[in-house]
Length: 359
Ligand SMILES: NC(=O)c1ccc[n+]([C@@H]2O[C@H](COP(=O)([O-])OP(=O)(O)OC[C@H]3O[C@@H](n4cnc5c(N)ncnc54)[C@H](O)[C@@H]3O)[C@@H](O)[C@H]2O)c1
Image 1: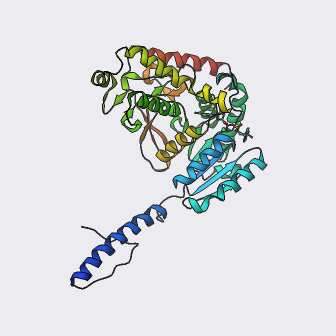
Image 2: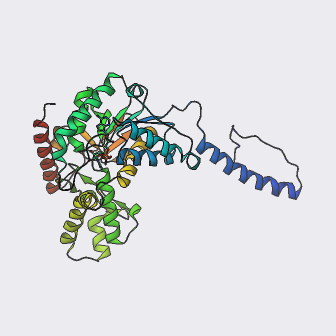
Image 3: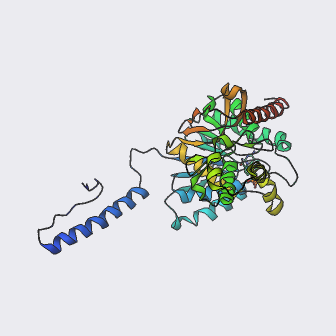
């Protein structure tokens, strides 16, 4: 039976037909109003959700824009070494406030790390045309390592999400510099690549992307790969689906092409417009949502492996359950022999990159 929520007032009506009709009508209106109210107001018992974003460039600002619209955060703090840029981005964002749920957006400083639930690091140099992610390594390791140390010094008790590239190595660097337990420092990893994979696969199969479950694993970079053994379309394994669909008899070749398309997506976008930021901004909101709302979403973030899949002491992307403490569980599932070899290949590449730094 419908129960009027505590934060709504109640009226009593008599037994006449009109009054009963009116009472039903009023109940429906009231119910919708209460739900709207619930969506846009916060209970006093709910924690204050504060997100600090370091790096106010294309990725940082696009993330803030999407995060503000999502209604997930109560406070969004933007930090960048370019103070003018922060000022401009904050002003531009707050002018949109009449069009999204209430959120305090402001420029901040390192003291803001202390009581934040999530610190998102997008600071660093962006990938230049023709530049590999690993070439960015040394430049960005110093920047992200320094930020991680500062966050830890402020005794932040939240989660740190690294986005700057090469994201897997920088996640490892940040983890070591904070000294935090491993699950609390994660990288955006292949969450974006998995989204690209789902989109391209959905288009190829003429199926709504929401009915495609698929993951890209390994390094967020050239050695990443599609986990076909975990791919499901319409709830059934992709091998079964291909038999039902019958669209491409030479499916091995088609799959190689799809995989290549996903792997090369970033290069195409960077060649056309200089950098990528829309889809990654949304991918970051999805990760944020799982952290702030304890959603336990399964996401291919970059996380520290300590023996899972036979890999130790690197950060790379495998399916993880994400909650308010970061990685709740790494899903150490069975991969095909070929996929496992690809994962180990990614781990070897990343190990070499880590060894080239003094972490
Ligand atoms: N992981 C992913 O899926 C993914 C996707 C796209 C981009 N990226 C990466 O995200 C990063 C940011 O990309 P972008 O396009 O926003 O670059 P950008 O150049 O537009 O912004 C980077 C910002 O970082 C700031 N910055 C540099 N050093 C800093 C420091 N020490 N403290 C505070 N701020 C500092 C710069 O002033 C700049 O505003 C790059 O490394 C890029 O490769 C990652």
